[in-house]
Length: 289
Image (cartoon, rainbow, N blue to C red; front, side, top):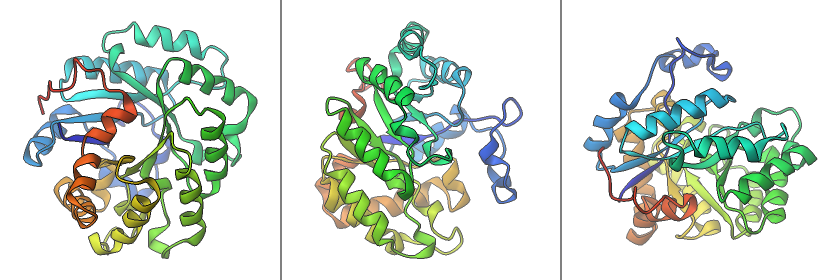
């Protein structure tokens, strides 16, 4: 099964998305839902997807679970809970009991938007992460270079947990290759319980001046660090539309992965996501895209 390991749905007419207020994001400031994505998946040979949170909202997580229950191609939801709130265990139990709750596979928070680069290491956050791990859910690390030391310490603190690094920690491609990013990515990869999503790279480059050749050094470095068993393809649709179409984004990443070998490409487009998120066996193979 071919999986898009990272995509979003949203509707700015129904909810606030503070990160979407910048003028240059106007082209994606509209509703995107399953009916928009389904034909793109079919046209690009994708069977299923992982739907990822967009805002710090338990209501959004509940909505995404309802969407997953009604949308066969959404095989997993990475939702949001308040890790600092002290009731993470109870909240996760409740979410798991909702329609679509069996498709809750992970939790995420926009850590890179927190003023404190060590937010992940706060005592209350660590308690919340303990509950996520206890429920056998994956935690998505949405961090940049600044927050990677805290991400490394967190992965080390929960060796029994599973972590997925979103967008390869958003390397500053538009500014050139960053040695600090590269070194910290390598250090994070030494934690064997962390996977890395090859996603969101084109939008870290100059939107009107990028191609697979410019992305390849970053993908190659990530592959060297994480190996073929811990890379995950993700489109980051519809954010990716800022840089190009779904087809062009998928083709560019596929070209990069194929340069590293067909086995690297194969594992990144499905098997690694299944292992990282423990996609429930009854859902694997439903397809429906």
